[in-house]
Length: 115
Length: 113
Picture 1: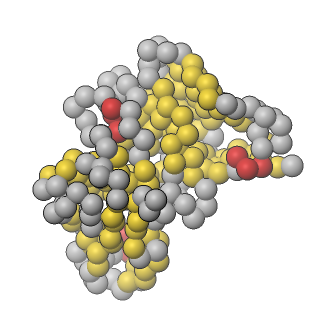
Picture 2 (picture 1 turned 135 degrees about the horizontal axis):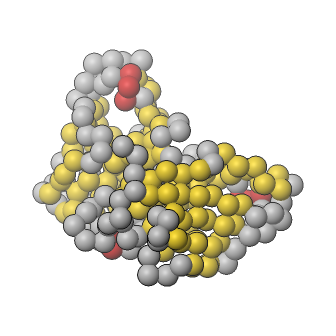
Picture 3 (picture 1 turned 30 degrees about the horizontal axis):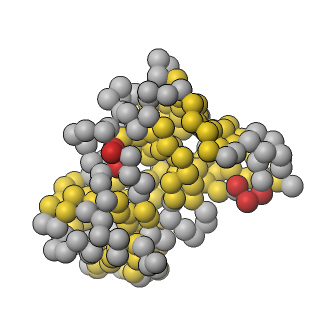
């Protein structure tokens, strides 16, 4: 019953560093997505994927890169970290896209600070 | 451009009272409206959802009211309990042609004994 697993839970980076946030799900879900949550801003979609090999941009994609080589994994890469990317990042998955009434299963987040 | 506007930003309700959170949307193509509940340190979890072909949906103490003409929907929590203290997000999506879920900014609910 792992669901959606995000690693690491906490991370501190220096400006300009790169890193990869990991997301894995064991529910055989086709649809996966990344959100960032900032105080007073709600959740904003960064990138999403509708299956292995297929990704697309969300509302705030700049500075982030994704790939989907397997159904289970959907890593998020920060290419050159900036203080504006300090946030809590959530990965979510579902069998079908959200508009078809599928509940999104969220991980517990990665709290990222950029100094 | 924010497509889903949520209010209030924070809400304090006494135990046993009714909590009401409101959302308004602009895009008339939206046809799926879920509410998510988030506890501190956790990811959001689906609470209840509605489609515009019904005006109300009830699950236990939680009710969604939907007003299509006004482009508004709201969450009512009856007999609010301290365990309901959390952040609530409304959201909207389009059934066909979109893979995105648009969230409101959230309401932090505190239920005091």
